[in-house]
Length: 141
Image 1 (spheres, one colour):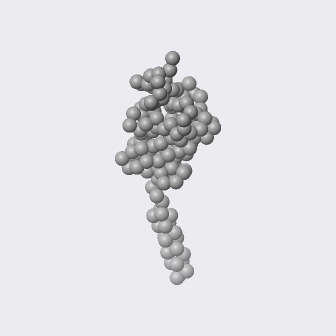
Image 2 (tube, rainbow, N blue to C red):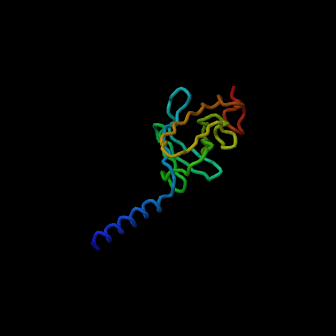
Image 3 (cartoon, rainbow, N blue to C red):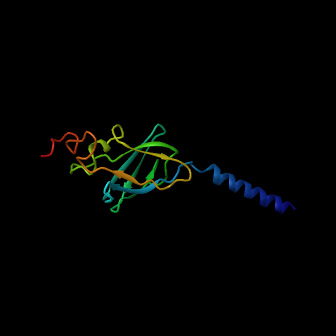
């Protein structure tokens, strides 16, 4: 009888640890593509909200998994502005307005039960108010 009570106690403690140690983040993964369906080939995506910020690395096929504290650990529930900042001195890969969380037109709502968040970006020069294709550069001919 005491063995059963001890086993039950261990089970309760284990379940409490598993539930209590969870960070509450939700896996956020998907594919980043252009409007024509072509996947982005590498880069970093940022996710910003009132809760905090996260990021994800895009692989060569456009797939990403977002992280809040460390890569791939998910994001807390909430609404996020999604951007792809320019991190090199090469040509931009997305429309200028989608390079900053302040001007992006891409948002997602992270919620329980949903894991796939496919993102659609505009090509450089095709964003709203985007005439140069890159901030701080002269307009393209």
